[in-house]
Amino acid sequence: MFAHLDLDQFFVSVERLRDPRLCGVPVCIGGSDPTKRGAVACASYEARRFGVHAGMALRRARVLCPEAVFLSGHLDDYLERSRNVLRLLEERAPRVLPRSIDEFAIDLTGCERLLGDPHTLAASLREAILSEIGLSNTIGLAGTPLVAKVASARGKPEGFLAIPLGGEAAYLAPLPLRALPGIGPKTEIRLRELGLQTIGALARLDPEILRTALGAMGETLGQRARGGTPRLAQKQAIVPFVGQDDGAKELLRDGLFGRQGEHEAKRLPKSLSRERTFAEDQDDALVLDAALVRLVETAVAALRVQKLRGRTLAIHVRYADLRTVSRHVRISRDAEEHQVLAQGRRLLGRLLERRLRIRRLGVGFLGLYPALEQLELFDGPQARSRRALGHALDRVRTRFGWESMRFGAGLVYQPGSRELGSGEPRSREPRLRERGP
DNA sequence: TCTGGGGTCCTAGGACCC
DNA sequence: TCTGGGGTCCTAGGACCC
Image (spheres, rainbow, N blue to C red):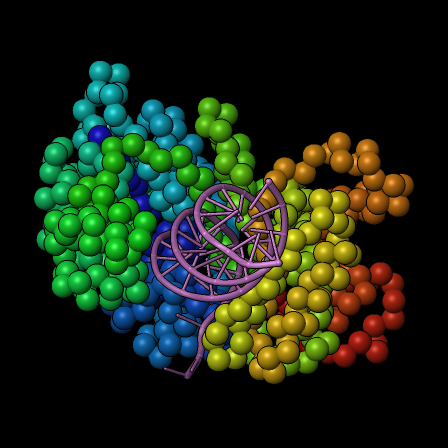
């Protein structure tokens, strides 16, 4: 048997532990000012009753539920409590994989003799997380991880839903297509065009038809519709970044579950990116360049902390009309930050040829690989000292905050009151933004 | 009233090589 | 000189998830 544990309205629950006055009132995490751009990362059940849900624009949430309390949230606290949950589960269950910050897959196969009945064990885990950590949660129990996940989603909140062994496909059959992980809005439309309404209909469809219509994805979905496989696929946690400021915190984020993984080979992330959406759509080249500098700085710093390098640099842009476009370039193994920045500027230049205002700018690295310290042997003294500077910078920023150290163009970004930057006079710097990312 | 930020995986076309 | 077919890499974009 497999269990899937899902923390109910996780971010809101943590905020309520921090401030019990939030109990019983509608709460939206995602930004403290709902008149600004932003999205709801987590809405309390009280807010959901008004139609508010995760992913919704803050402004829309405010219209639907004006009396809601809007908060930026505390990502560091969420990460810590998520690790506490993982630790508790690992102490009492044979094999646990974090699926995200608020979801955990638990393998209970073959542990009956050691740990007893899976139902009893799963129920005790649910109870322990509630009583010892204070977090309400829902568990789904089934013969495959996939069905356990579906069951937990449908058992929310504060639920415990066990699907009888062998009854996986029967449980899924009457459910709507969208209940199956992997079916989003687009795929749902295409499946409906094939005349399908339920997961059961999808399960019965000739695999050949499915394959012709949807390619490899069709095959996968067909298998899932029939219940999936009774194995926990090795997959590393995805760490959703809630997005609120506090630059230096990123440096501390050396992976969500840094400690974990002695027995599980830790998988390298495939990509790393930093993005930001402007308060207002931008076409000022100076502002865009300053944002680019800042994003490259933070992304490179994050790579350095995780001892990774990227093979490809990507710049992506979302234009005012919401179209998203990216440009990529291969970067050399020994490229340094200033060279990466120069490449990024070139790519951004190409994207600016379309004369549209820019809503969002992003810098990403793809094809990540471990940065081998030996590479430094081949560096010249200049490269070495620049690298040392980078490491020193990371340390200073970790201790004193991102704003404690800034360079040239990055200063345009956020003239704050505290930082002195590199000592240059800043009075001439235009004040272009009211707050940093 | 226009939807954040961080990821994953898949597809498809073109370049290039053999 | 013309040219097939296959493999791989790179780039760009789409769909999905939390």
